[in-house]
Length: 313
Image 1: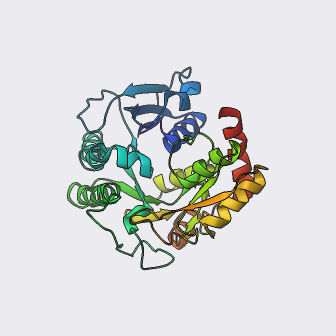
Image 2: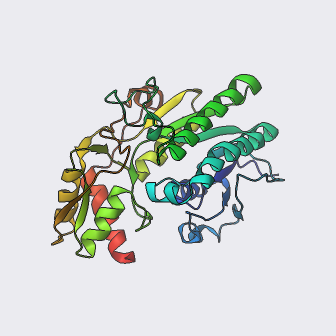
Image 3: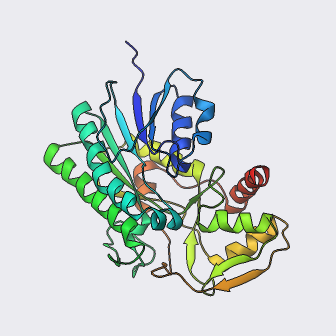
């Protein structure tokens, strides 16, 4: 019998999930990638299908699933994760955050596996605390259009902690701040793929409000490194993962125009309902626990991402 550790990655054909699958295979782990492909794509993991230690299962984790394999770790990344996705799939978003997380935790309990929940900075809503620490409880409109995602993830965190406290399950929770890189979908709806796609097509760059709202952007390789470090650290409360370098959305638009050598102009549209005005992680906890800080500079990461988009547009 192989002594290789087996990872179940739900949402493994998605943007971040596919990078995790790839890194784990590269580190000689066994990977079961489970995805229903409503927002993930087989293209993201097609290079892994030739590896004997990689297995893909098309399944919606919101429905029960029986897995016969030994599983040592579960990385639960299944969820629509962009505004367009969770507005198009509001019920599925709520179900995967609740029923899906419940099912994934049930597998972890049955298999005695470590469990990591991919939560989000959206649990903070439109924050009144800046930068956001893990101790901040958030400012969320539960019935607004973004509430389906915010509340799904807040419930997922609550049930994960309940399984940890009641069933003594070995759990982790990460709160992911804006992450970017190659493989993001062009119609993703998030700001970086939107701006890059518009810039490369020579279309106007659409900025909402006056562009004074802030975001902090972390390159996907840095995020994956932090996730895999946390898996091996004995800590169960939420950990912010992201890049604390904050910038306005308008500054980002101008930077992408410059890096892509685009002639696009900037236009302004109304700010969406409940759009957060500020987003910046306090990563003190991650620095201390994981000895981790993001390494990839924004310009470098954007150039890599722009090159990928140019080749795939």
